[in-house]
Image 1 (cartoon, protein in one colour):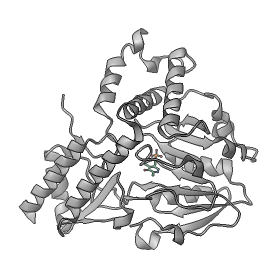
Image 2 (cartoon, protein in one colour):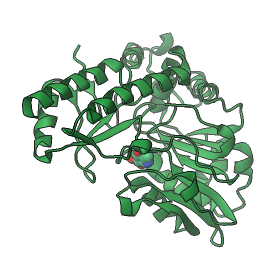
Image 3 (cartoon, helix red, strand yellow):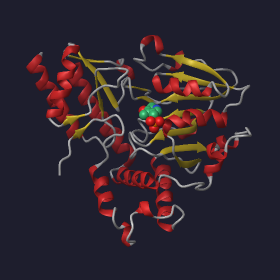
Image 4 (tube, protein in one colour):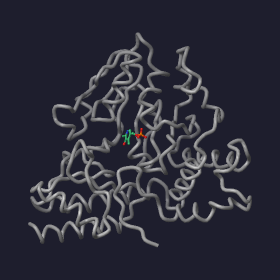
Length: 359
Ligand SMILES: *Cc1c(COP(=O)(O)O)cnc(C)c1O
């Protein structure tokens, strides 16, 4: 069995323990003589998977049954359109905090449905940081405030929920979902593509607070795109295998101690990596220090000409997928929940070695 240290930004590493269970169950799920993939999504086995996954999310995030949880398709990118399709009417305005590529894409879609007020834009600072609360401005009749809690490409992350003065938050949490605690009361809705921190690609978790769902007053929303269609029941065939995998990951998260465990572990991994980056001028972090992400650690080599060599030599040492996003360049180590401390230790030791060789 050969497993490398995988720092992929997404689809990202899954826990070995989860893959082992999936392997074990793939021919014969719980003695049924078929895999879970080969059964009706209305059957007993899949219904149980669906309910377990939802109950686990509710427990892990302490939602206290105040949210409808849905497993949808089309990626987080479809939510950029589906959110305003449901919640923003032509004469209404929503606030968007612009912290980079993903926020920008969300803004572009929202403008097709209503008015967008940009609460903040980090564009002229190349999205190297996220805003302080004091920099945010909101429209006085804002429908919601949309933000991206972790900016996968730039390695920036909000340290907590932005203060909206009570306007419901909608969060694209694709790349830091269940990595740390949230305050559910502040949210109207949270969504996350699974392939970063939660499972394989193919499913997006969408959680809409029950009273926020009731605030939808729009008509003419196509049935499949209307959140109300999915709130109480499974409407059409979901990506059953992806949801099954998400359920296994959630079980794994709970068995290890839930969010408190991962919050501590993720802080430790990030601290290790950033302190290696900050040790001297050989490496340079790209995000401003107080906006640094604990999920995607982005940095450059002072001599950018050495970056290709860094990535190649790292791969030879079984440290893979370290190339930065094509729009940002440099190096990016994605260290989501499933990335083990040993992997970060191995990377840090390689970085130290590489510095002595070329520094
Ligand atoms: C990856 C990512 C997306 C895009 O997800 P898709 O599932 O490919 O649509 C959106 N937002 C954030 C923050 C991401 O990291």
